Image (cartoon, rainbow, N blue to C red):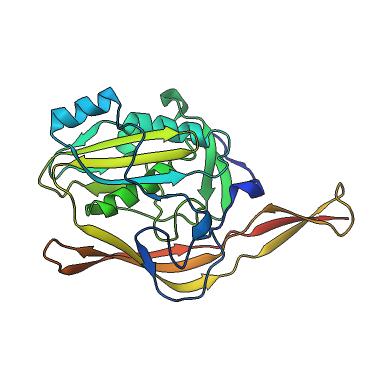
Length: 294
């Protein structure tokens, strides 16, 4: 891996994530609100319409595999993506589209679209490293992992491996993200249905769509989260002689750290409700960076 170079986000990249409740199929407990992305500004979430519905290759794939039922689809929006990020997401989506999993087969993101190296077409993009934001080849592919995680959960599939980011992310709610690092951390799920599973994915501008197709609609799945602890984001001040004295300019909008317990409820066809625990996600706070004029 080439030498990592620290970078800063533009303030426009960060929006406000919903920690308390989400617009889509998600309920949360009444807990203190963490500073993140607000639900009313969030465009990521489940969808029923996807951009490839009239694509001939897609039509051939569902006909060949008999997977004409949409299990679930999710859209992840990258607000003001950094250089290389959008490109890497689009590349990974193209590699993944058309993947078919047999009954009981395990999908690995790293095996499917990795390694994330230049010879496979990947470029430098943003990556979390502890509490720092750096550039690495393939940076941005965690958006694919997070989207896959949400589609897998909504499809009521078995999660084999998932790890949250070290800090909150601005494109999905707390507790609903997944990170990958080739050779170290993977996102994996199992086709726990009794039928083939078709994966289709496509990047359109700053938006990633991923959907799963099978032969039978899954039960209704609903997210739930409980915020157990919040760690307030600190502010780091840096002097900037080019700014008027006393003027403040936000370079990086911080996000609170949090400890979040997650689970889903699954409503079966007979009306019974099953609860599935998804574990606890731990996020360190992302400090705000503020320039102050001298």
